[in-house]
Length: 275
Image (cartoon, rainbow, N blue to C red; front, side, top):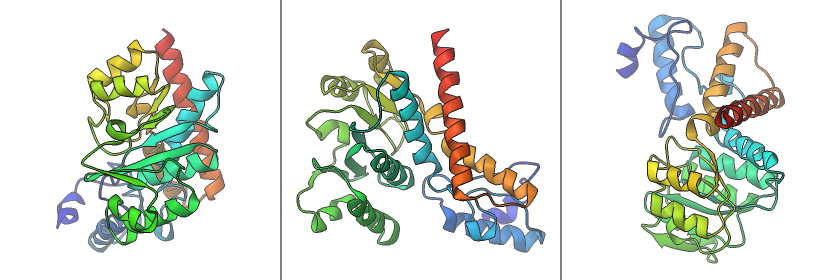
């Protein structure tokens, strides 16, 4: 019924909605099916579609991958690399999962995941096998991160805590990928005491104004959400382009374009900040 009314106001050359929290390819599929039934046309009216019917490769991964690429550019600009960095992730949905996947590929050490109930900490770091189990828990079983401990008892679960409140140890980077205002000023101060040097936001406005003031005052490299999580909407734009020309690019082509977009976004942010 939502699309029955929305279809009057959207179109490939009018307005193109995309998914967000709780709205993935499945939900976009329901909406797109109703749009096609009502309008009898196959157009790029929604992004985040399944690749089998007009979606783009790398779209599910784009926000998480893009945020990691942005983090990589921040590291490079400070004469260091992502490899070997201790990273705290919050959230356990799409963005956090694929941010973790890319961080593992680049040699970083991901130490935490969370959901609205609490946080899991793995001092040994998450690997491909552990990430696959987490994705099963969240994407198929629709479970909670606390259940991760059933298979991997060495992890520590903190009920009702965010990663920044409970982690003890060296922290090089944080990637808040859960929700708005999840990092407070007190959290930021605590993280700086643990060694925080880089922040790349995967969620929308996850750091409070007080936290941002702490980042600036303490010389933390800060990638604000509008820039660092732009990978998702960027690949939505690439999906629209592919729909318009009736082509589907390979995953490698889309990933290469995404890297270039995030590099350009970082350079624009850095150069503007210097002014």
